[in-house]
Image (cartoon, rainbow, N blue to C red; front, side, top):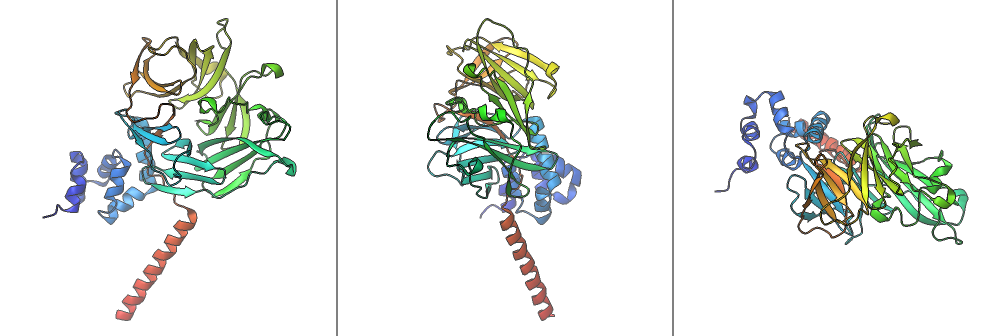
Length: 420
């Protein structure tokens, strides 16, 4: 005899959750919510089909918000996305094996993961083929096409294109910024001769908006090979702002600048930097995010890297040097270093090193241990991802489903009236 559906669904659950499903009427509603908000998104999606009350609970915006908040606070249901020619996911708790990421934009390889926030991932094949994808629910929204338009109608070729994905907390809106550079026939590399085209996609309005107020210094954001190396073209999200490093150009007298784009105000700005230590070495800076704080990695000629953390955003005096990495086993030089996340016990920090390895680093003792991940790419860029139930359905499809439900209800009422 086949096992009942309910018992199959609860067989892998912890006892409290199984009890809720088997005897829901005996459990107080607030206890049900407290138990369910700790479960993985994939388990919750299965339970939607068990009863209408459970479905309504799991689909409610309040529950989705609580579930995400708990996952972020407890660092539960987290994964790493490894970005190479193909995309992979690695469970954060085990850091054991890489699994190929199945997604609706797959064309055999080359899809970029532009960023991840609150369980949503922005994907790109080209400027005409973009999407926002929820890995847990496997729901996708294809973005409307917005053509890249050279400034002043000039006949220019599109050069490097910057992207950044983030969340506007004031307007409860997920946004994607696109900055397109242009080159003329006279120069195939430098792009600072022309204005950038900057557009922002709004998840809430499902439309693109052109940003008209673009500071002149943004022209110098792109530097040949700089953004391609170590995938620096993806904006680093801290709060509601994206960040890039405007690289130094000695011949033009430009030093490193940290440039931000605020998703709420939809404006560019410059972020103050720490007072870097003088080590009689030249240095290069990169930006990252750690525990929700902006951080800077100051790389001294690939010999050592200082990591600075801005504890209060926008306050120069809040910059604090967290540690300096001078040597990691089996690593001769530091071409690139990026912090990803602090371990749940708070004792170690997961680092991405030289686009080729992950390392647990104890900044108090200076000890490091390599993480060995099976079936992963040899070279990669890593980004953190958290499961969520955030809906991403296309507005047109949502409206179509609503009309179908209304038609079904009307047909049901008509049938009942005719029967009566």
